[in-house]
Length: 159
Image (cartoon, rainbow, N blue to C red; front, side):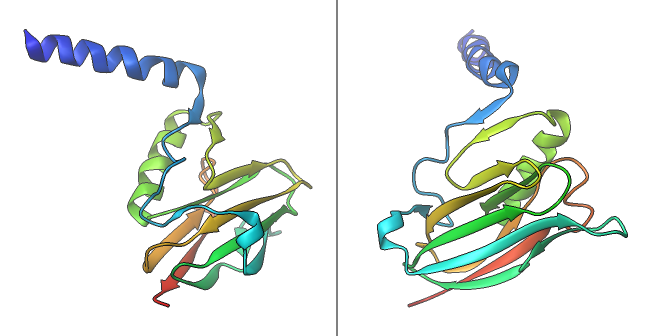
């Protein structure tokens, strides 16, 4: 009986989040890759462009960047393409999990400090403090975009 009640409670808690189509919450605290940063403490700005190519590829430029552990970075993102794109920063396994959810709920909106969705021609930013060294990913998880090449790598090196 306890398992049934627990399962019912979990379903009840999960249903509103899925029904609303919003991916808010859960990333406001520290993640493996780091935590939201203080813009006043940013020591570097990385400018990232998102766009499609004539041959159907979707790209981030640059698709690779390096930062130092403990560094706060402002990532200035411009959608120079003709369709919506997003920038999601996380561990590779989390990116792939999130990608699978986005395939089921393509209109899901994000309200997380490690991601931003931008309409064509728009710009935005993420301010992030990289607290763990290692290899991480960023990607556009709108269905089909990742497969078209829209993902990149972040290397965080010790101080």
